[in-house]
Image (cartoon, rainbow, N blue to C red; front, side):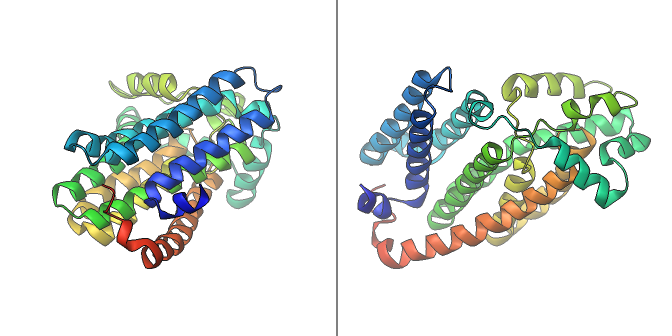
Length: 297
């Protein structure tokens, strides 16, 4: 099994490995996780369908598209959603107090409270929209690379983006935190409201994301910077288009009270770790199994 995973495309292998890890983790804490049986079924299904797509994707273009774009998106969303049933059952010690303290030491105050001075309905709408672009940035890059038939660039980008997502999920399990919009609600002097779009967007995000204790590190920052790095390397025009939304997204993480500044710093560090580890593994894979990169498409 290990040998087969090493020979598999990195993007396929990492989803299988992470799903197996979550399956084993859930089994280990079976008595502490109320929905353990359901979660084990979910993770087993992800493993099964990923393996099936590896075998069947060569049959037609739709299965190839499913393997390369549709299933990775589904996997990321399903695994993220499952964390709400895992994190606090295996690690009940939220670290918000530590993150709040670190922010205070760095800025001699609370950044989310300090930003209330520049809050305005228009700015709130703009930043809430920018924050939401997080869900589209990886897909935009993937579609662009696919459309231009940059197959190797696509494969590497998919692997690095998935690695960044999964590493951020590990962070949530190790360092659970609610984030300032919950943990600092008693300190907030005013609500930040927009004109038209911020409240509906926030309601949708609350419905999609829920309370996952997913503050540290900032996955929004990590993924956005990883995508921006890949766009700079492979699609320079897209890089310039994405630069402003990504910058605004990072500001929005704090302004909209989703993250502490230390979370954003952690998200930037997450990008560095992702690229460093990912490059090392991908280069190892290409040297040793490069012949198989497109063989089983």
